[in-house]
Amino acid sequence: MKQSFKYWILVLLPVISFGQKQIQETNPIYQPLIPASKVSLLKDVDVIFNTRMAFDNYFLDGSHTNSLFSMNQLRLEVKGKIHEKIFFRFRNRYTKTAETNTIDNVNRSVDMAYLTFDLDSQTKLSAGKMIGDWGGYELLMNPIEILSYNTINNYNENFLVGASLSYALDDHKNKFNFQLLNSRTKTFQDQYGTTAPPGITATETPLAAVGNWKGSFFEGKLETTYSYSHFIDADNAGRNFISLGNKYKNNKLVLYYDFQYSKEDLDQKCVVTNIIKSKYPYAAEKVSYVENWIRAEYMVRPKLNLLLTLMNDNAYWKGTSNSSENNLMVTTYGIIPTVEYSPFSDINIKFYAGYVAKRNNYSAYAQDNFGVKNGSTGQLSFGIIAPLLIL
Image 1 (cartoon, rainbow, N blue to C red):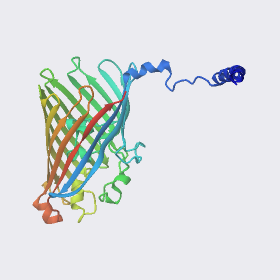
Image 2: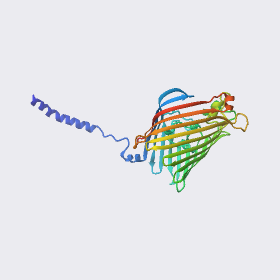
Image 3: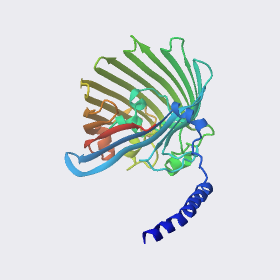
Image 4: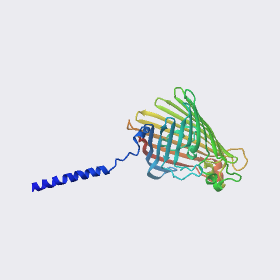
């Protein structure tokens, strides 16, 4: 029996070996998706998943309404150099409806998609969809760090298609940026439709011009980002926007203060429009928004950070007559105390607990004429903030 078994082994071994050789010869060696010659490009490219997830508890006028888990932010960002003088940046938001804009033909979920060309060591030219450089640190921060925005940045269209030219002085402590952007992402008809006031018609040039100055003083302890912007929203209807952002950093303390003022011939934020809509079926004209935003960060220990954000906004309307008097419509207050804990020293992941409290105080004029009532909202969150650097 043993001899018979050995016989069959000797007979089949060459056949098996031949078969294995045939299989190896017929299976090609597949090339990697990224050729070896291109791998070197990845050293200058970052892939980041900007995430914030939490267990959120909501309150209305002091009463609990619901509690649930939320993916508050999920933005994929890819950025880096693809050439010695060419930089690109792309960021897509997966927590926003991906409907296509009717002016720039880009999904609203795309925050940024642009190229930057280094013309020389001090001058850069960018083109594509980018963040409006109106100034102010609230908007410049990574969105996963902002639990709630103040009124202007919350309702503004902050990501627009256009071009920018920036110039830095020799010491690189003063930088100047000029942008020419679309003033909105939707056509006049899509945005206003039947709510366009009589006599207000679409413009042939819905554009915005932005001028920004960034400064650095006292060895970087004090930084500024100031801007003036003018928007053409319709024929004979525009917006003028001033934003003054200030940042102070010293040891464990970081302070931010933004002042913003928006004067709008046609209400783009729609806060005033929503107040008067019960009696006036059109978008409000001659409105203005004045707001303040303060944020303090104090690192108690290397892994423990305390934050406090204060915000305020005042919305005004001149009414339907030719009156020159600004009627205060609503004052909004906000406070956001937050505690952050970073357990790891080698990766940027933070556990946080924060409470967003906001209150709308309507003026006597708004209450008497439009029947609005004061109210408050609250949101208590326990979650994770993580800009995950994958590559």
